[in-house]
Length: 239
Length: 153
Image 1: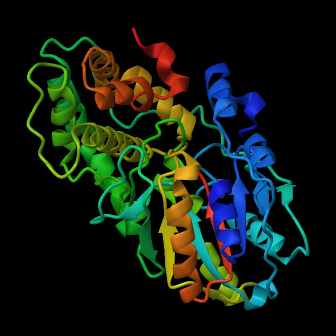
Image 2: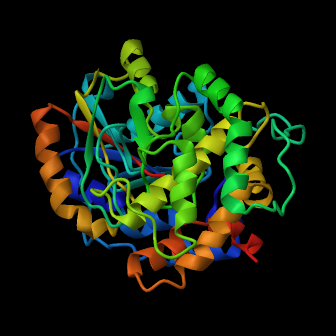
């Protein structure tokens, strides 16, 4: 991000930026950066808090009026505290493992239970972030679980490489679960992540797939398994 | 909150170990007051319109996001699994504050909103964005943009 600022500025385009990792900005020294203390993934801070977001954006923009640089400033506020999260519970009861019929039927059953909540969330928000894979929710699960066995399943989108499609399917499946679960109020990102990775068959499918990909000869699939399926903060749940 | 010191040990090691390009000098272009500037947003969240090609691992290309793109038409194909996506799922402005920018223009704090905004997939070695970045500078200037806000995830 900071490097891109250098390239644009060298070409004559003034830039400012939000910085999430202060240590990186200190090393890269972009022309203007506003460091914020918010979680990775949230450069403007909390969702649906327009006043707060506007202050962050304006603070970053104001750096453009400085006479000289580089400028690295700290935004003064942390994300405002969100309401107590302890009351959150997944809107549906998911059966405890193990399910006798295997992982895929368990994930498909979860999807069916979550679907009304997913639809409700989509209606309330007026949008869904599901869909980058181009697959239906059940088909994301089918494609992911297809890689647990030989031979690998046929690629439903031949213009996308299998490792890339697996990644897109994984993020779509998670988006479906997270959006459905967030229909119940009070869910923080951390709480939703703990729920997905500790309590759902879809989470278990990810751990199983990670283990499997690490045994395959294809470098792109190995990289996916090593780096891009399970967050570092949840890796301890693998068994 | 995310101060590196507050991250779990593995994440902190990883993040602080990421190689950062160093620049001997920092170019610094001054311009008119904010109220007369035309602003474009550039995100590295791997955002794109639903029917655009998704980003691939190692992608160093970009997607254009027309300023009138509805939030419902944007999806994300970033390869990292180590950041929060629930904020984006709830509210696009968490990663691409188009509504906030329009409000600042309506207030008179900012001059205008660019015709196009852009998105990269930020898990790529940043020095591999150089050629694309310089090309993009030409497109921004053609759009009369004299202020860019870069937004990581």
